[in-house]
Image (tube, rainbow, N blue to C red):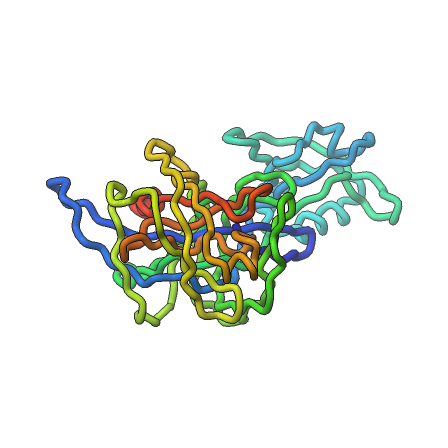
Length: 330
């Protein structure tokens, strides 16, 4: 999980980072080393089109045309839509004439014809809310010096209101600093609070069900760690690296209490925070800690992904191997 900020008509949420292992042609695993994360980072992501997050329940033009929540508007007439403002301008300048919206719904692409109407502010509108971007703070799991790439979020960045995986146009990451945190309690998810710098250290090139991936310009190689194979992971003591103050991570004790070897998702492990210092500060796992590396027997085995809402000392983790498999297709 991670902490997100809001931009105009935008809300967000983020999460994790991963690692790299290599399989040789004869199926013998080779040693892979990466730069250990645990550091906070800021991100900005811009969608490929604009997401419909709400359609007015009244007889609005959008409702009459059959537009639905989670529809992705990619064109208006002959204009490729890249932002909320572009679509808003086209609608307001329509003079009430029909607009042809090209929409992607799941894997289907089709055109809806819609006629804007005057709203209560005497502007042309079609009666829906849209989103084109998001921003937030998360935790790095690793940087790979060989490929100059990073991986993050044990699950993808989804729209806060609709839970739709945000279709990536482009994005960037920046260095971040944590100023304080809101402690989690049973039923209430806490969160890291902070800010990120204006200087970009990398670009986001993929957002999928296993996280975000991209290129980076990171040069600190002081914390190199080996990547564990899946069969090396076991229940028992482990640690996580996370930053709950400032920009430098600290090591905290956890326990891997359950392993789901056949779970092909970000829920491969259940972990429990046992570190008294971390529990006193955060109550356990909170938003913004997603991506915190999980270390066992000196090797990187996974990353924190989710918190249990009613038991904030517990949460899910993803196997590093499941993240690494995604990089092969990038």
